[in-house]
Length: 295
Ligand code: R5P
Figure (cartoon, helix red, strand yellow):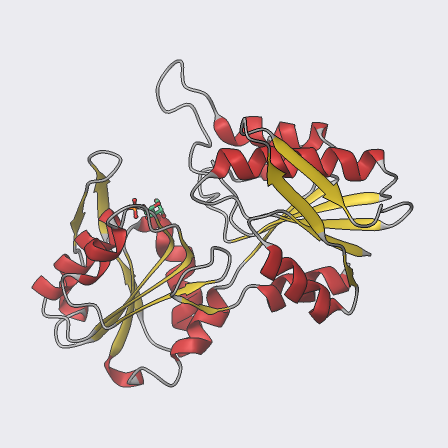
């Protein structure tokens, strides 16, 4: 097995190779003056399984194109199998046609990966709540790992067990809140979210009696504009929450998101390293390494 990484995930790839005890192959990626990509590997993958690591955050289209170039070329150069490790998988929220005429971006991305030589995909906490069976839209095996247990373990020594509740900002976040709450052995609840637009949401608290006087750990998969977390923090504070912590798998942190997360008085924001950020104190790399080593 050889590990390759696109420009989004060099550290992730290097550390993954080290944990697996396999070779990391350096990939030179640069742009020509006109913006086109130049890519070259230090070693061709002839006959080997090639693991290609590329998280697709913040500039997903650039990272996706780079990934497709590398995946296709690894296959062309004789890789026995190409395993795409995509720690943050983009376009997963556009998994259906909400309005007539819309592009179902998730199926397009999956088809591109398959057509460009990827044999299987490994991701972390991909937002797949409407897709019950990814096999219906993906022709290649798709494994969705989770970093939520690691997030739970991070908070073990930080919380007062009898005084803490885990809160998901919406119904979809129940799956992540439940895992973190199980690890911490504390209760969890979810709020009700109505999306008003790309950056604004309204959040209602249904079980306010559980929040009064408690420390609250809000858990979600993604923080993008910070609108969801901002509204959730406001709501739990209004309902009498004591200290408020926030955790997510993927800190996309679009413009102004940090202000929106912190301005109501959040104690700490914790994220995983699927997307590098100053808050990436929990690592998804051992989770991916464990999975690959079992394959
Ligand atoms: C959507 O349902 C996701 O689970 C997140 O809640 C959402 O993507 C967060 O986005 P934002 O930070 O822009 O509110």
